[in-house]
Length: 504
Image 1 (cartoon, rainbow, N blue to C red):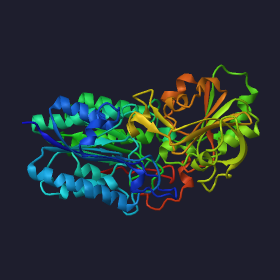
Image 2: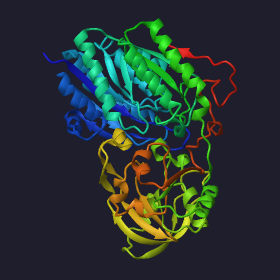
Image 3: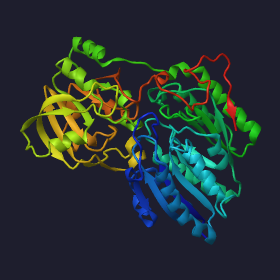
Image 4: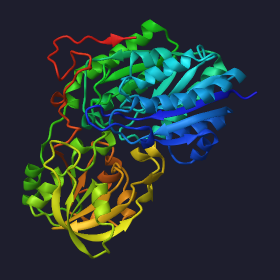
């Protein structure tokens, strides 16, 4: 008889410092049997479906919901998810299931629940028949992982790469561990450790330290001890004001508390020793451009990367910092992408080649200088739909292969080409530009609203890349945020002589 596995997905990275609220209507919702149609879309859910076939699971689907990173989620959205999930789960539990698998993020927060994943796991455990079932799943590397999550689950596997090229593969690993649990009849538990460190996303790429060192340590630990089923290193999400925000380490283990805590302590000490490597600061866009324009012409685009308006971390994507710098320095042949549905709508009646004066961007963040008024010539428009060119793109871990930017308009003004979107879309795949008839290799400068996840797509085509400091809600300086709920002391917000590591 095939093991029956209850499946659900709840995925959101919540930026609690922006004013917007994320509603139920902002989520893409896939219910019931329609979840099986995600097979082949390169998402984490696809990885679960593929590995479940190999494991011989009978999947009992509930619902799978996800939204682009954005502001605090309304309580009603979570309660709507729970209502539908529990309505599907209760009859399945009554009939009998052997395990539960969840696709989660790990940094979701609502108005009332700063640890949504922990709350969800607690509610699942309270369902009749679910208290002792093995619960496995997958979490994003940028989750703010709580002790509650790890206490209530048996096997939450986390992405190992940033950019998240392994979202699907991590789900395969997690599903395989559930299969191991059911075959061997041994149920692991999770152990957790929190060093007092907060790193902004630009310091969490896994190609360099500190995350590369933690990754290497984790892989060596797993290889050396078969009772450590998985060793997780979560960089945390620094734009969420929650008690557990920051770096956490966890182990899926049958090795017992003492040995598991020992290997977690080793990782915590390593992370602490490298903490300054994750604290990265940048020059202004103006100073970077001044230096670039004095240099010889490069054969390929120079990237101006602005983490402060990182769409993939919940920023609005309409910041004007780089656009203003390009215009002020009279840069020719530059490209930027702005999310501005108002501008798209205002240009909707213009034919390609026509020009109109219009305000662009700068509407969503109080520290921005505001909209830039331009004489905009329309080059093209589209419905904004495209398919990822790279199935391992960071974007696939968020949305699968098929992306919708909403209605789009490409304009040009004073030497700068601007792709205007109606739905904020992280710049993680070159298909975004190619779908609009834009060849990124033909531009001298490209503004990129990202932190790390763009690198897989853009690094192969660049001549040079510079991170720049602009106004925006995803600043790489954590001390600039009004923290209220974060457990203190934490570095670099506080001076710490002797760190205390929390364990569970």
